[in-house]
Length: 351
Ligand code: 5GP
Image 1 (cartoon, rainbow, N blue to C red):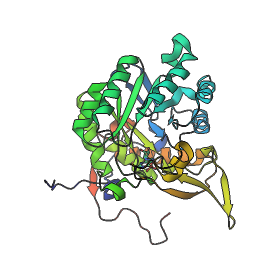
Image 2 (image 1 turned 180 degrees about the horizontal axis):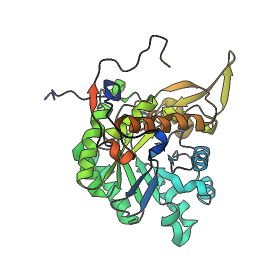
Image 3 (image 1 turned 90 degrees about the horizontal axis):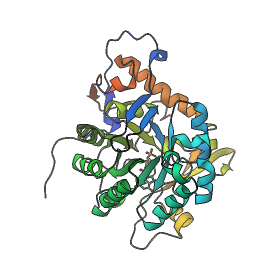
Image 4 (image 1 turned 135 degrees about the horizontal axis):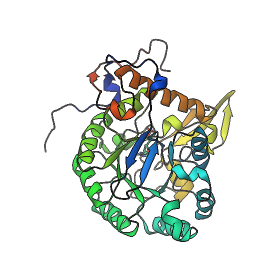
C-alpha cells in the first residue's frame, strides 16, 4: 500500500487569477480552436465543447441545435440509436460535428460497419469521428480494441477513454487515439466514487493528462464534473483541448425525452448511462456482476439549449478577457490557478 501525499484538486478548489490585459471586450475573443489530429490527420476547427454521449444530451436534436448555433460545437451521439436512424442522420449537415459512440463489444463494430456500408467508399469522410467509450479505460482489452480500430480505420478520428493518469493517456495515444477522454467519477449522475471508492479530482487529472498527451502531440478531452460555466474555463485553462459535459446540457428541448409536469413544475428525467434506469431501458436490467454506477435525477426543464450555450460560451469568452487571452489557445498559457476554500457565495442559495 502507498499513499500519494500531494493534494489533487477539483474545479471547485481553485479560481482563476485575473491578469492585466489590453482586451476591451469579450467580443474580441475567439474561442474556436484548430487541431490536426495526430493519427487521422484530419482537421478540427470550432469551439471544442462536446455534448456527452448520454440519453437526453447526446441526441440528434442536440446536434441539429449545435449546427444551427454555428461555431463547430460537437455532440457525441448516445450509443442507442439504431443503424437506420444513424444512416438517415449521417446524410444531414448536422452530422458534420457528431462523434459516433461505441463500446468495445462485437455488436458495436457491427453497428458501425452497417452505418458505414450505406456510404460506400465515402464512409471515412461521413462517419469521420469515433468516440470509443468505456467506464474503465484501464483494461488491456480496451487498449487492444483502440489499436485494432485504428488499424481498421486509419483515416478516422478516434476519441477514447476514460482514464485519469498520464501513463494510460500515453498508452492510448500510442495505441491510436487522437483524443484521450479524461474523467473517472466526476460526473453529475455518476456514483463510481461512492460505489467503488475509485476516482481522481478532475482539475488535477486534466493537468496531468494534458501534459502527457501534449508531449506526444496528442489531445485530451476533459469529461465530466462541469457544474457551472466557469468550470469549462478552468478545464481549458488546465490544458484540456476539448471539454465534454452531460448534466449542464440536460433538461432542454433537445433532450428527446418527455417533459413531465409535477405540482406545476416542469422537469426532464436524466440518468447516468450505467444507472439502473439506462440498463432497464437498453439492456434489460442491471447485469448481475455489475453494480449500477449511475443515478437518476429530475432536472428542471430549461427550454432551448441555445440559452445555456450562450451562458457557457459567454463564460469562457469572459474568462479569456480576464486573463488577457485573445484566443482560447492562449488561455492555458496565461492561466494561474489560486487555491481557495470557497468558490461561490451561496448566501442566497446555490443558483
Ligand atoms: P457531467 O457533465 O454530467 O458531470 O458528466 C458527464 C459524464 O459522466 C459522461 O460524459 C460520462 O463520462 C459520465 N457518465 C455518464 N453516465 C454515467 C454513469 O452512469 N456512471 C458513471 N460512472 N459515469 C457516467
